[in-house]
Amino acid sequence: MILSEQSGRKVKTILYVRLPCWKIYPGGVIYVADFIHKQHPEIKQELLDLAIVPKGERKQVLKARILALDPDMVAFSWRNMQSFGPHPEDDALDVVMKFDYSPNLWHRLKAAVDAVSIIYEYTASRFRNFAFMRLVRKLKPESKIIVGGTAVSIFGKYVIKHCPVNTVVVVGEGEPTMLSIINGESSTIGECYCKNSAGEIAYSNRTDNFNLSKLTAVNFEYIESIFPEIHEYTDDYIGVHTKRGCPYQCHFCLYNKIEGHNQRYRDPVEIVDEIETLNKRYGVRNIWFTDAQFCSTRRSTHHVEEILDEIIRRKLKIQWTGYLRLNYLTLELAGKMLDSGLASLDLSFTGTQEVINSLTLGYSLEQQMEAFQMFKDAGYTNQKVKLYIPLNAPGETPLTLRKTIDRIKDLYQIFGRDNVLPFIFFIGIQPGTPVEKLLIKQGYLGKNYNPLTFNPFVIKKLLYNPKPLGKIIARSYLEAVAAHDKDSEYIGRTTMDIIERKLAGGVGGKTPPFDKDPAEKQPSQTRLQAEPPRVSN
Image (tube, rainbow, N blue to C red):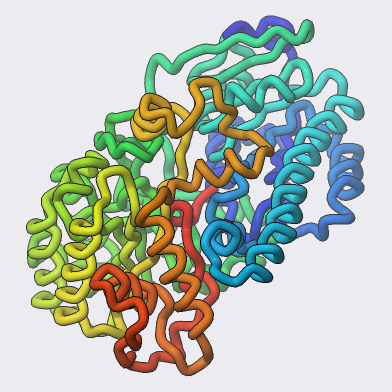
């Protein structure tokens, strides 16, 4: 990737702009800003988080910050781009279920109106984000524009087409690309797309992955000086990552493409230094490990154990969680997880080896069930067990669905019904994944379909929930929602019970009685999900 047009200009000031999304800790851009400061402390940096700026004021706030700082480089962080992605500020997935499957005509008509509103906002937000970039180019014609974040790591080749000239779009890790541009290299390091002054687009693949051992504990005193709004986030979960890379080949996931196949690790002491600062300086009690999976391979299990030992040694009063894979769990490790403050067990779950194999999830169901029992034997008390269930994935049948329900019942027996939370999610089809290629081959998607289309009928297809099971699952969910009140139980459990009843042919029968648990009425626990939410940026 040649950057000769801008490579000779020295960077003195950087403005990071986190583009609007729901309020969630901007961990990714904070890691980049901290890393750049440690390499070039002479560079002045600021972070503007548009997620916490009122919608009507964002353009003026950005303009004022650009004029005040006069940055040589503006780095945008773009988190989410698809309308069906997990989003606590709208009910897109609920709307799809009602429009397609509600037996009530009025509900279907209302869902159609709601869908138009959601797609309008989805479309407008994308146009606004590109308009923010054009504003920078207008105010600062010679500035370097960098665009990174989760959304562009997935849709980089689509994003670059709409960016202003002299823009670099980063796929995956931002640290090496940012550093190479700042250092005035003639070409970037890392995977990225570049649009030059003539509007020509070039692509470079990564030749190596970032050495994660260079990522020391975040200097939060410095971050607070460039981002005083960090205090807006300290009463919720804060994202900390311990490694990057994923060796697994799950059919619906892009982590192994974005971060690479090889796992790279941060120093456990540096990780816990970071957690301790968050805990003691800012009073942070809740930590979310933002790795693709916190505990996944045999080697990463040893790394996890070192982190937990350090947390226990320092007697930190925190709660932590993250996406777990339990292939290599031992009774001793389960005990250390609980002793160090495990808040909940969060993991993908399907109760049949057939679907596990179909999605190439790469683990044994029996091994996973044994690991659940290890947690119970290691001193489990009342931590929630959150099961992200990819219902109706390719390979799902009525038989596999019944098997999943039976396994969930086994978990009720182990942990207590009130502590097991089935999160019903559907696979969101992402470009370049094996499941996308399969569905194109089967004719479910057109060969040249646009994954960022505004066509609502294509958007619905990207939320994979086909007939005939789609109707049973959706109507079960809608029935559970209709029955939901402040004294009813968690919707995910209710939905699974209704699915079981419908599969057994007892559609007209009564739903079994439920234990009441009013404490579990959090909105994030009552939505359908396109994929498990990621607490990172």
